[in-house]
Image (cartoon, rainbow, N blue to C red; front, side, top):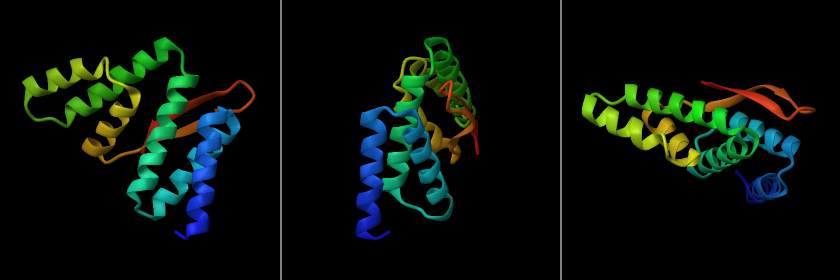
Amino acid sequence: MTIASVQTLESLISISANGDNFYALVSTLQSLYAFLRDNSSPRCEDDYLRLMAHLLENYLDASKQLFLRQHLGEMIARQIQDEGAARYFKQRFAHAEILDLLKHHRNLTGKWLVLTSVDYDRQKFKVKQV
């Protein structure tokens, strides 16, 4: 990635996260994911996870956030062989920050959460694991 494209990417991320513009945020997330499919970049991965967490925290209501926490906790716990450790992490993840959940999910499963079925007018979306 060239210096100019890194600066452009950083500007987009800043605008998306700070301006809280749903269209810009979703567009940037989709662009980052498209980049990540073909390139490995720890910085880009971190930016993607931070923006995804920002979107989930700001555009999901409390009940959907709780469901997401439980679902991610279950998926993470399935990756842990020790039952005691799995129970511990499920309990811990029930109250963890969404960004921390996304990082643990990515590290333990190797999968991404991506946006699907985006409705820009109603600012709604679905998330799936790939």
